[in-house]
Length: 391
Image 1 (cartoon, rainbow, N blue to C red):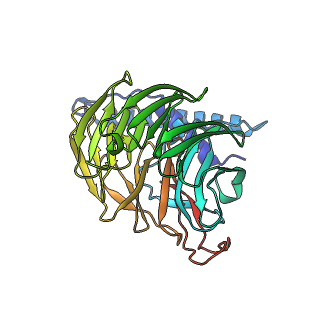
Image 2 (spheres, rainbow, N blue to C red; image 1 turned 30 degrees about the vertical axis):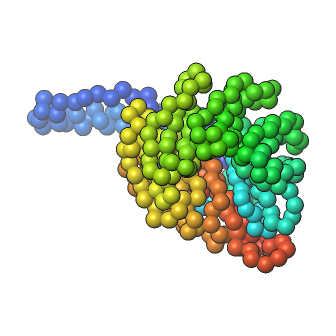
Image 3 (cartoon, helix red, strand yellow; image 1 turned 180 degrees about the vertical axis):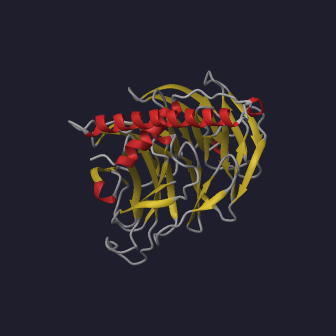
């Protein structure tokens, strides 16, 4: 049965959305007792009418066959209170040895974890459907990769693209669908990835940005970057366009809309790392800070210091999330720059983050605290974990 309070809250929200705001000049309102009585009566009548409507809605929903009301993630997100503290709602034990490096991606309710367990051979991808609780999670597939140097993973919920280093000079980019590798691209050096519904972006380690058709795996275009082997290494694709960051000189670049030119927008110091797009700004990680850049002017409009080396950052469409190498996670309000620390279980420091705008949450892969040889104990806190954190 549907909770009565939930029905009333849903109805109240629908009713409020359907109202038209009216500006009232309180100085012009009548102040006589008769007028005040009239006003009170009017309010009582209106309240009675609303109560009748609420009762009618409740009766229609609770009598006869139960009707299921489907609310889209976008609509549901509107009623999430911004003041809720962040908390870990699930800690899923991955059950392997300590893994490093690691990457995580989430789309369409499927969380994909890329990792290389120490001493267990090649890298692998684990795709999991994760429900609202730990008991709702299930491993869909586990794919072993030919290479042993996992770099990055992106997903659209149906398939994944994974980059993995092959030696020191080249990397492979694998397309995984239905539990099998269906295509392989070759890149120079390592390979950062970004995915949209129509384009896979591959930023290799030798100064080339490739635009790939994800349906056919064919390379559409190539863009040579300045600096060759010292070109930008990090990429973000979103509503503000395609942005790149260089760890060598702190420069920030934007790809032109025609995908054929590159513009140097600004520099934020000696180092620029991972970046994401949130609240009409490009957020970039430095060594121990995150900086918001106005895409129109290139100016830094806000700087948040974390006082520890930044490990990764992501956004959930509302907040910025930053993991640091002192095993801390922060939720940052982009409007104020206020950083709120998240209470984490004893699971080691966070290796990678992935934000989910549909659920206003973030997924984190931890390193675990297992120091011995062999597999860790799945019932203990020393195993690597997949954490689900919400606001």
